[in-house]
Image (cartoon, rainbow, N blue to C red; front, side, top):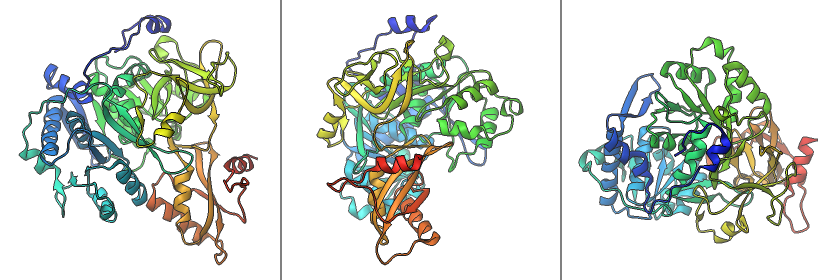
Length: 540
C-alpha cells in the first residue's frame, strides 16, 4: 500500500487510503495471488520434527474454497460466527479464509484457554461452528452441553462423536467458490479482549481491518514485500498480533510466512529457526525479545539473514532496544495499538524514524494525539491519554452486544486507549503507563475481573483482588491478594492448588504467579475493591 519515499514527511503527505466499494480479506490475502502467481509460496509449515510442508497460494486458496463449500453445505451462513481453536498451523489460515469467503465472522481462540474461558467466549459469540484439533476436542467435551448455538464441530485431527473430519470434508467438496463481495465495513473478525471489570469483550472488526493494518506493518518491517522477504512470528495466530501484525499482511503482500506450532517459546530454538530458514522479517513481541537476550552472543554464533524486526504488544524499553541494535546492527521497529485500533503509531528505521525509549510517530493515514479528559489535544511534552480519531479503517466496529461499552470507548471522535503518554517536540510518542487496571504481561492484555471471578469459585476463597506486579521480563506478572474463608489455613499446598485451579479454567498466561493471603482488601464505601492501593503497596 505504501509508495517508497525518501523521508517520512513525504511518505505521510502523499498517503491516501484506498476506498474500494467491495473488499473481502480472503480476496486480498488469497484469491488475488492464486490468480496472479499460483505457484508462489504462501506458508511453509515447519513441524516439531523439523520436516516441512510448503503451501502455494493456489493450494491454500483451493483448500479454503473447499472448506467454504463444506461450511455452506452444513448450514453456516453470512454473519454466523465460526470459532477457531487451533495453534499456528496452515489449517488456521484456511479456516479464517473460508469464513471470510462466505461472509461469516471468524472468532479466533487461543489454544491455551481453559474451560471457563472457552465456554464464555463460545457462548457469548453464539458460535455456530468450531474448527479445532484433538486438544480442543478434549476441552469441548466438558462444556458442549452448555453451548446450544454450537451446531457444527470440525476437527483437523480426524472424526469423533458428533465431530466431522477436516480432511474428509475438504476431500468431498469442490475447490471452486466465488468469494462473497462484501463491503469494507461488513463484519469479518471478532477477537476477545479483557476489560477491567467483568468478562472479556468481543472486539468486532470489518474486512477493512486488514487495509488499516497495512501501512503500519509495512513500515515496521522496513517496507515489507521486497524480493526474498520471508516472515515469521512466535506470536499465536489467535492473537491480533500474530494474525494482523504478521500473517495476513505478509500474505497480502505476497511474502511467504513460516508456520510453526510450539507449546513454549525457546530463545535458542528461535535462533536456530531464523538461521535454518533464512528468515528475513520477524514480528517478535517485547517479552520474547527480552528472552532472546539470554542466548550467548547470538549475533556472532548464528548466520542470520534478517533485515527487519517489528515489535508491539507492550513497551519495548530502552535497554532491549539498545541491546538489539548493538548485537545485530539494526534497530527494532516498535509500534503501538490495541485490539480495537492497532498499528497506529510506529517506527521506521529505514526512514530515520527510530528513537530509543519512544514508540514512534503516527503512521501515515492515522490521526493520533495526546488528549485531556475532555478530548482536547494537548501540547508537546504534556502527559495525557493516547487517542485515535475516527473514522479510521483499522478501528473496530463495536463491542459485540455491548453498545454502552462501545460508546464509552469514545470522547467525541477520539477513541481513547486507556494508555497514558506524551508527545515530544519532534512528534515521537512516549508510553508512560496504563490509567486503569489492565495487566500487560508478556504482550497479553489481561483483565483482573475474569481472574477474580474464577478465584471466587474456589471453595477456599472468600474475596480476591488481582493486580499487575512490575516484572523485568514480562513487564508485569499477575498477583492475587486473597482473603480465605474462616475455616481455611494458608500454606504452600493451598497456594499451588489455587494456581492450578485458575490455570485449568482460564489459561496459562492468566493464572496468578504470586499469591498473597491477606485479612482484608482495601474497598470503597460502596464495596468496590481499590486495586490502585494494592499496586501502590506492591511498588513501595
